[in-house]
Length: 244
Ligand code: ADP
Image 1 (cartoon, rainbow, N blue to C red):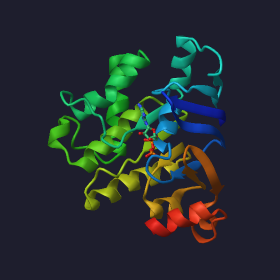
Image 2 (cartoon, rainbow, N blue to C red):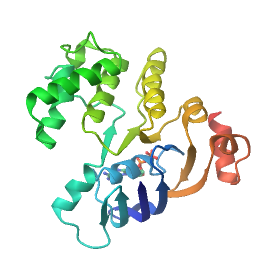
Image 3 (cartoon, helix red, strand yellow):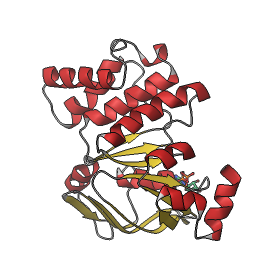
């Protein structure tokens, strides 16, 4: 479903992604871990083309772009629509209700008729446990509720892959569980997900594979049980010792 080959991203002189190769199958949940600054967020942002890669290619389902050459805007748009991002700080529109936040993407991006977008948004908010909050504005919702709106909003775009960028790290500890539960439910439905997170419990319970990144490279990739009990690389071991 996803094939990333030789992906590089440079900000000025700083090379943040130094040749990422990654294949992901349909329905897989991939958790990405690694020290701060290792390029995890940049990788997700490149997949959603919020950052344009410097070189390398990205294929998601039936859309491919090779950034080693010039890539047209239409191609970028088509590739971008294959994924949807859930952000650390939710990034909801503050002047819109939960319902309007979820409807906005389909109406603007996919030109979905308003009545259809409304029905879908209602269903999605119900699905993430916010059936009674449709007309609430972000500031009237807890962080966990806002993030669940963020997840519903991403799902409304009907992406091939959901990208989660540390979705629980801005939340008070008691609100983390409700967001992780929604993500677990999505994983159970077979949605393809790439998740950057420090929630090792989630990684152990839900991930099909865990990827350890350091200094812009994938250092190690394995199933959660091997990654957490017998990592192959010394750098992975050091990182896991620090956080576990
Ligand atoms: P991580 O998510 O693993 O913490 P990031 O992908 O956020 O890592 O960042 C990797 C490196 O890229 C950091 O050194 C960061 O300062 C740098 N970086 C990220 N975005 C930009 C940007 N827009 N401009 C310049 N440097 C950036």
